[in-house]
Image (tube, rainbow, N blue to C red; front, side, top):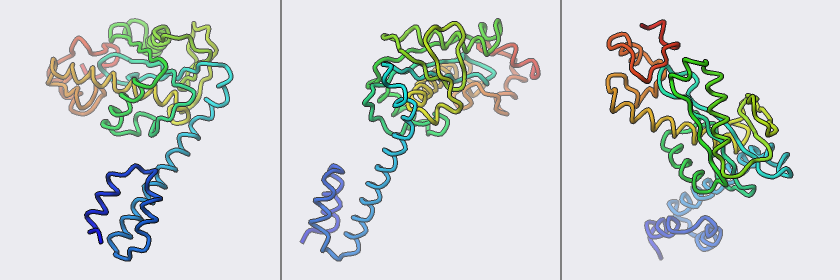
Length: 251
């Protein structure tokens, strides 16, 4: 008879599709450790099925409009920070996309975002990134700068989408039909993918800025107005990446 450790190793090495065969082999094994292992694996299977269903529910807009052709999800990150650029992303996923765990980037851990970023960049039909600098934000205001970044993101796609699925906004000066979706990053896999790529892109930039301006804690606060960031702003003054129109209350 195999030891429990050996059976655990067997399950650990097995693909989930092999679980039913293993259940059959060990169903008569009455040892509590074996039965607990089987219960854990069944729970893992149930969690995977629940995630697949959640993702399917997030494809309601993709299914509604898939007859049109390429659908592009658009989202931005960085409208609220005191420093750094605003970054927009446009993502076209394949119609048969099976990427799991997509969600509003704010609901994911940094490590999960990084993991999904790699998957999205590998599997997407096309990804476009647009951004606008703090200077441009000060010049034309954050909303107009965000629209510019979104238009740039769309222009960088390698294929022209037939429809844009946007997180909440309608982008001016774009001829492609658009569907604004309130809280779209939690309702559409395409918008969720865009939110993740935009977030990871901007976070990486802020981590690089942290090396140049270490006093402000950009690696941790990403330019948002945390207490430490505001204290540093009052002590050291502004940097070239601060938005002058955002920091008038602090300097």
